Image (cartoon, rainbow, N blue to C red; front, side, top):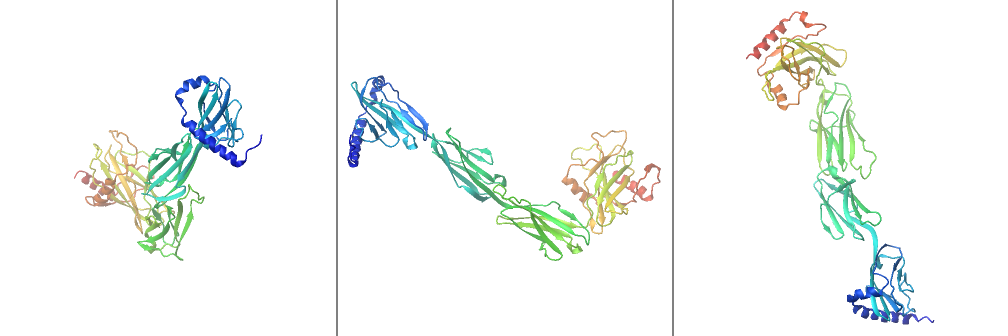
Length: 503
């Protein structure tokens, strides 16, 4: 058979299309039952994947004269016109079935098989649904930097067949929907309240076809610098080398300046500053600038003592922290004395460290009434000034015995030391109990009290208001204190304690 010229073939296809459109417009599916009785094949919906091959069956119980196929309103093939080649990937089988090879998404649709036989004209409907793995786009993508207080909206668009389901994740943890959803688009809105909200935000789309699709954006939360102090008080002495340190976390990176009594520290031969980055492996999830800043004073003078400020600034804001450089003694620490305590005395042991010689200690104690309740008003503090004993090193360990105490009673005590630079901070308040016939419940020798702000204020306000300052000699016990004679100062102290107790 001769092949028709190209122009003639095109004209034939136009004619066939017009005829199919006319016939399709007149298709009557009210005779579905009659059609089904004539067809050997049954209506089929094929759900398949891209690049697969699909065979749509179409066969009658009786021989047919011709068969033709069309997809929706597009003519595909007509057995009466073999000279007209079908579209690529389309093939008509001799029994009337239609093969679609290497299916693509555009092949999705309804397919109609029309057959004509001695019994008449019949139509059977089939369908192809090309399932597509999900694809997802996210906006914004890459990296976004926002500061605390901002609102961050991420929009995700998913495509696929069937329609994918969208979910959200931040740093590997599932997020609930906090935004809007329209069709295949969904948004997630976050109000940035803290640094912890930084990290990887992911949009995930899945529809049961292939692997789920993931798109992501990194959120870096910018914040005012955080300034942390390993030591808020640095103890030193004249002529020593002092190191003041602060650690600054910031995003973006911060500039740090040092101030002394409100004035900028003049860096040079006497003092210098150094920086060490603590987080060296910079990456998307480790974006915070973490730097150790060190101020070195090479030869401490009297004028160098006092308050220093480490002030960190970036474009988000500024923060600072204060460090005291001092030659005062360190706060005293009470040690538990495992020795036997009597009913009217108690041995106290404390330790402190000072780079300069300590001249004296100030011991403060008071009795807690035996019927003490949660917020019982305590008695006034009694204060003793105790000379310090010389030592060869920097550590001072002092032992002192309080005499004339009430049997079976509870006391609390605090101590501080003084050198040429002044008094140390108060030690923590501790409790001790004297022995006697009455057993004190929950007794723990020199157990630490809970931090009580009002009691700390009492220490400052009550001392010297109603108690006279007592001067007592230092007593260092090498054995039992019972065999010693009482000094005049100690007798005076005991008498005054009793007077104060019964006021």
